[in-house]
Length: 114
Length: 116
Image 1 (cartoon, rainbow over the protein chains, first blue to last red):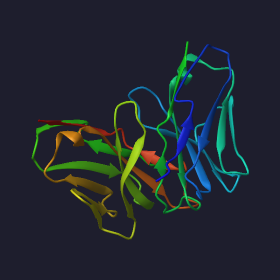
Image 2: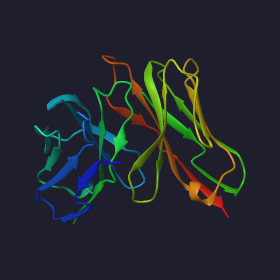
Image 3: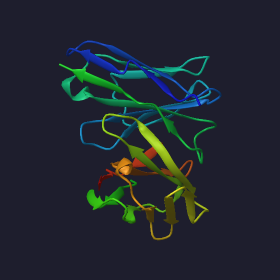
Image 4: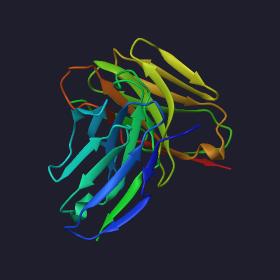
């Protein structure tokens, strides 16, 4: 069965550079979530989209932005990268608004900021 | 603000044992609770989802229970195998329109090692 696809798997950037992470949800899933997991930390909710509109916002820095496109894939744009942005970034998808629905996670993008 | 705590933080047991992982949450106004498995450097795999109106869910050797009023959930793993070695995360999602952060609130996980 198709799963959540994230690209790239690994990304190395330098401070103050920009990065774009992509997420392709499971087919027919209309809700996408972004999470950030620092080393040894639990995942922290960043932002979510339902039917191409932002639905919820968590601890996403102002330097980050995200959107969901007409084909339901989502991109997380990160600017002015800082060392502390180094983390594993997960995307998850669900069918429906997320309330009561099981979330399916991708394998994540490992971002290293040097 | 919802807080999720998992005990123990780490657990190492011989193969074949039955074991219980514990999860507690401070705000009982949850919509559902989900258990995940995470392998090192990998994504999160959903194991079981329990709706707030349910008491337990079972999948193969896994059984998860939920006591919403006391803010507790347990994940029971029967006849553990070395392949079960991973970090197990508990996460809750609050009620729509409720206070606190939206999306899943995760515990810090239990790092499980099953010795062959």
